[in-house]
Image 1 (cartoon, rainbow, N blue to C red):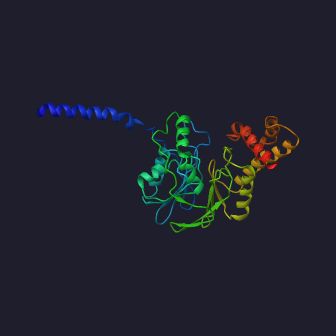
Image 2 (cartoon, one colour):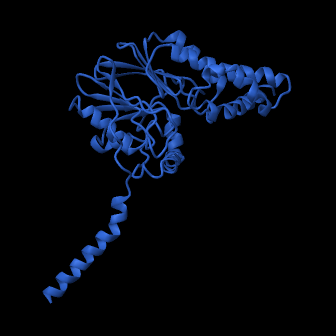
Length: 322
C-alpha cells in the first residue's frame, strides 16, 4: 500500500509540475545591461534606445534615472517592463547597496513606469509617486493596455510584466525631501498627457522633463495638447533655474532640448492654425508643414507621428473656433 501511495504522489507531483511549467516559463528574456551615465553628482541616467518598442530592443525605449543619496536611492521612470526594471536595479547595485527610498513616475505611458514591478519586488513598501490622474487612469485599465501593447510590439519579450502603478499622489507644486535633497514638482493641466509631472532638483540644477520635451525624438501626442505643451515649456523656461535637463527620450542636455521641441510643437500648431484659416484639410496640410519642419526630418518618430500630430492639432484648432 505504501508503495502505491508513493507512486501516486509521484505522479501527482509530476502532473502539477507539468501544469505549472507554462506559468513558470511565461516570462520574457532578461534585458541586456545598458550603461548608467553620471550626469550630475550621484545622479545617473540610463539612456535607452530612441526607436519604438521592438523585439530587438525588448521594449526598452525611455531614460530611467536614479539618484544615490546619503541614505538611499531614488528612481525616476524605471522603464517599460519588469525586465527593464531589473536591469535598472542591476546598474544601481553595481554602485551601491543602499535601499530604495522612493520611485517617481512622470506620466501614465507605460514605457516609463511598468518597471515599477521590479522595484516593488525588492522593496515592497517603497513609495511610488505619480499624479492623481495617472492613478485614476491606471485604475481604469491603462496599465493593462500598456502591458498588452508592449507584448504585441516585442513579440512577448516583456512577458511576465504586471502593471503596478503609483501608490502616492502628487498634485504638482509640492516639494518633497528625499535622501536629503529637494524635489520640486511641476504640473500643467494638459501637456503630453493630462498626467505629466516634471521634477526639479534645485541643489543639482536638474530638471526631469518627462515626455514634454524630448531630445531628437518625436513622441506621440494621442493624449496631448499642442497649445498646452507650448505653454508648459514656456512656463518651465521662465520658472526653473536648471542646467541639466533629462528628457524622457534622447540624450541628457541643456535648454536647447526645450527650445528645439517647442519649435517643433509650435511649427505644427501654428501651421495648422494658418492653413485651417485658408480652408485646407489636415491631409492637404501635411506636405506644407513637413517642408517647413525640414530640420526635424531625421528625428526618429517624425515620419510616423507628423500626420497624426497635424490631425490632432486640427481638432484643437477646430474646437477653439467654435
